[in-house]
Image 1 (cartoon, rainbow, N blue to C red):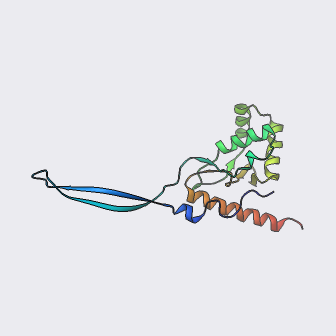
Image 2: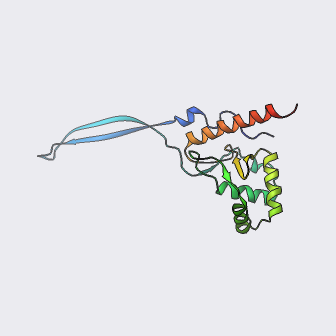
Length: 166
């Protein structure tokens, strides 16, 4: 199963502009009389939000995921770094024990959950204790930075497909 795809955050969405009409009043400083009114049509780019985003095409809404795995996925999303920095989540033994204590998960259920998430396209293991959470599901940072993470995810997925035996 591959979660993701092309164009969830398109370049057009990143460049979405807002048209605003501003009105300026020119006042004579000595008399206080309004001498002129000017209306200007201004365009500005909508800023991207800077918080964790859960995208509408999130398969969590459709797919039956075991409860402990869903809890683990939420815990991983809470640990998600900003998209303009290192995109990987570090899960050393301290981090896993912290997640276990906070969310009431045992070590075995967390290991089972990580395995399930990797097999079903939610996570990619990037090395020992480092995981890349699918940016089509969750993202933190600007829309442009999240789009870069989505492109990186797609490249990793295609490389993974090429390496898998036919």
